[in-house]
Length: 206
Image 1: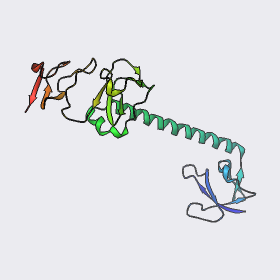
Image 2 (image 1 turned 90 degrees about the horizontal axis):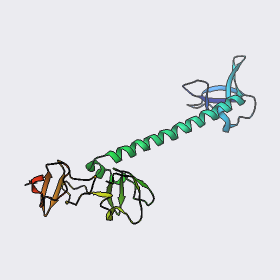
Image 3 (image 1 turned 120 degrees about the horizontal axis):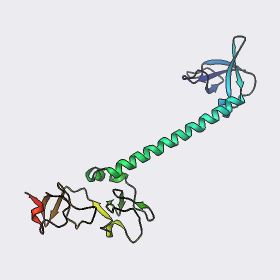
Image 4 (image 1 turned 180 degrees about the vertical axis):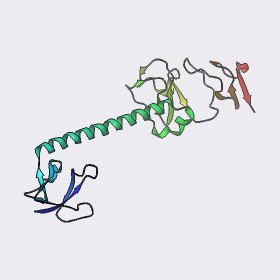
């Protein structure tokens, strides 16, 4: 039976598809001595006989093709995992301004998840960053909105309202905050108190 096959351009031997008539893709003429199992195309090879290419079933070829397919799927899965890990690493390391722009992409806060410093999660429509220095497991009682020692909100505002900081989240030089309608820039590191209490550590922005 005359058939037409599509060959892999990289190998010129691997059969990708078969047709009973010539097409733009299947244009290599071959002879098949029996029914071709389309579910096992990887098992077939071409063998020249008297100047004619015959489609020959080869069990070793089939086993080899199954192995190649499994390796391809494993590599694709590993690549997807790598991309996910790289994305998660980038998103957790992103500065607050960038993180706020990426807010739709962050996962929602869930109970029972290991929380590490810098991790960002959404809760009730707001984005929060873990500030606790030691890892912990999230609980229903310690949600981001009521646990200022564990989380800080990323508001997206250039001068967010001053909030009492905790260890691991002290105001650093260059940080911005607002208090009583006024805007300030922190001019020292590890500042705890508000501009109204320690004005020497803050510069008011007109």
